[in-house]
Length: 150
Image (cartoon, rainbow, N blue to C red; front, top):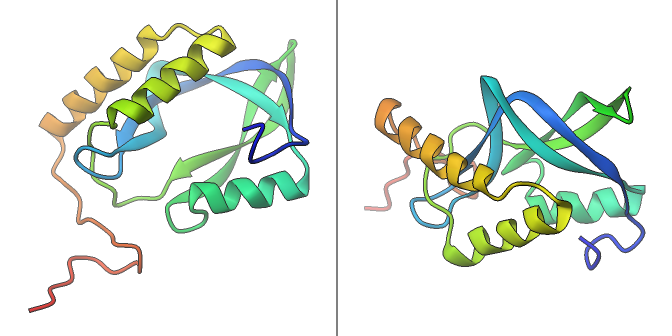
């Protein structure tokens, strides 16, 4: 984050209630997103960002094709504040993150003071979803569904 958004500042931590961390994107290179899940929560590190930081994040996160932005009301220091969150667009299949990506998230969780066991729970939850929901039609980078080139 410091490299992509040099003017961003951490303002605190919070939780996104009734959401769960899930991995989607491809079979073995999936990335994190959040999805509604009553009774669950996702810990988050809150940042104050400037417009240039947001532009850099939009590019990095693949906004608006891969991730969309949503404003959520979160609690910070006993006050409700609006927070912008990137959430993956519909149509991406469930999968497992690469070891590199997973270890990067673990390091981020540890440095923020979050329990890394939440990531194991996210893998378990993703596996449960894989068993219970049909695989969606995969979108490609051009926004088209199941294209055949032959």
